[in-house]
Length: 318
Image 1: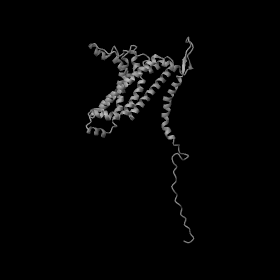
Image 2: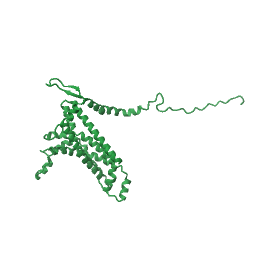
Image 3: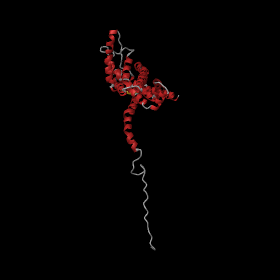
Image 4: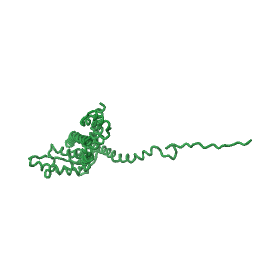
């Protein structure tokens, strides 16, 4: 038609959808991860960081009492007093040396047993693997105090079935002599924690590719050669992890010697370990001194763990 103009309505184009976080009503991107990490951060700060800071601050004060003891004790700022006293305390220093000796001997023995058990269960000819894994892990499932109570019955001079069996032979094991009481405690810890470490190492063994092991067998490698050259290097990370956990656990030794103390005949004093020494200071009302002992122990454990990580890391790169 002449003079008529056809007007075509333009089709609406696609609307731009605002990206998450760009619109005025959209929540900020940082809010979601904060909601997930917030509870952990709050609990970590409240239950871990805050006590450490409080102990460190408390250790900078000293408790002063009057000569007659009639006035209440007062706290005075003395940043080095408690540390000088702790490092000059023969009982506390002896407890540090006792725990160091305990860790140097007990940790390697326990990890060697855990590694051996893990390799035996992982071997190709092993039968009943689930049963042996459960049997090895069961001692860890027993609470530490309960296990120490059972072992105190085994160690007691009056009721020890071990010494009862050895008595007709004219033999006996002095579980609470000064030279053996530390190893009596070590025996309980080894019995309780070997299975736990075995499970960690055994889980690491399961990550070794079956093709690698089969290729080694086809090349004529024996089971011992495969374990030494393939399996143990492959679980080195798990061994390092369990070693660090065991070092820290050795420094925290408390339950076992505390349970054995009443029947030890004085062989386990109240300052047998650093934690027991700090607990004795708390019982005496000297909280700053206990805090200083705890800080010294924490610094030493951190230094030993760092040195261990550094040493093992250099060997891995070599």
